[in-house]
Length: 232
Image (cartoon, rainbow, N blue to C red):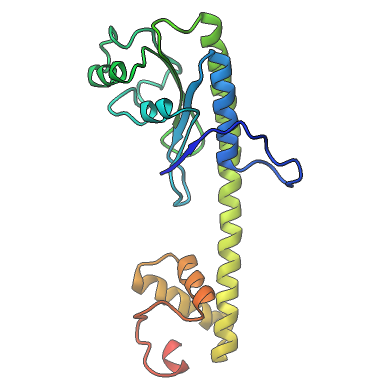
């Protein structure tokens, strides 16, 4: 899991392109805590594309609180916001509530961050006093969560596209290396990568990455033998 603590340092104005997904998540947390009037907040979600899960928190307290099981889950967030006015009195998730009280967290707002990927993430803010959030702050937090769903969905789709393009580029370079080194056709070179992928239970892009970075195919390929003929 990628654990990030929010920093108020602004983005680099000289850098081209949109913010990265972690940067976007930090912006969302900043907006959520401002809307709810508390310094403690965070966003956690599982990410697709075989990447680390995302956890962004504005404070250490928020980071710890956001990772506590077994609290409100996807079913609890299916209808939108969950409002906990007093963790010492809320009996819906007794173990979670008791642990929250021990951390000094007395009020919590949680909202789903829905994307095309499942399960949804969670945006949460925490306060150290009971009944800390006014109706106006609850509504503002809900609006931030709704905007976060749209923004994070776009960012994750963009990340997936970038990874797909990068993977295709790696595979293309790997094929080119095999074609040049062993005088293979493009189709036979691609077949070599596929066989290694299947035999070693590695993703095709990882086989290609190993070849590009090390100059060699991964160890123990099938029927490697001696010389290029065994590769084909």
